[in-house]
Length: 260
Ligand code: ADP
Image (cartoon, protein in one colour):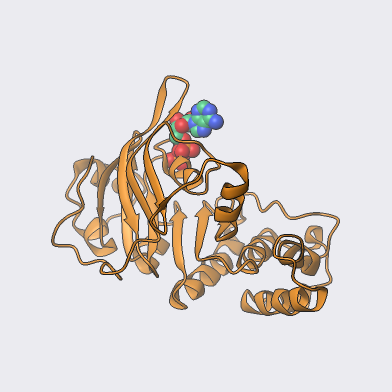
């Protein structure tokens, strides 16, 4: 278990954590995917999870909203352990927006319908209220003018922005991003990262699994480095990217061509 540096000051550290991982252990068969992971996500923080492929970042993110079941340890959401009953899990998930690498929009629904469906079916908002909220979210991601288009007519970056608007329309307390730009053409990555930066600037609590080191360096308040299912090191981005304490962190960054 890696202990957080005692000297590091965290955003809103005096307030209860939105998410707390305590000694989390996850197995796939006999393979240990998460091995004693302890960390917290404070209100309004942007936490980036970085590290080599297969190191457990996505597994931790997916465990946060119970898409993966953990074998050991505890995950606390707003101070409460993740529930086990399907009904209670659904309630917890409603407070967490999740954005995946693949956008998973409904192809036969318009952009607007993709964003209104959650608030209408889950939160029982009226058609009008859901429509208003969806338009506001599409405005936020810069795609209100595409409201009546179908996903297939949008670029990958635009579809991912719709997926972000769809998650935001549920008014989540926290947004979880699982490599949101990995499947995108290089020219559309920036527009998605800009929307994410804007959300961060507005104070949204975010956990982001990413290979975009410039984003992590620039936007994260806190960076966690994974390797082989364990946290190697965690700290402020400046420290991680300019003065990493662990050789494995330095190796990982130098393999990516990062030289501070
Ligand atoms: P990362 O996000 O850091 O790339 P993942 O969390 O996706 O890593 O995966 C961690 C490890 O767990 C990898 O070795 C991966 O192959 C393995 N893994 C992930 N999902 C499954 C699964 N459903 N079944 C078996 N192994 C899995």
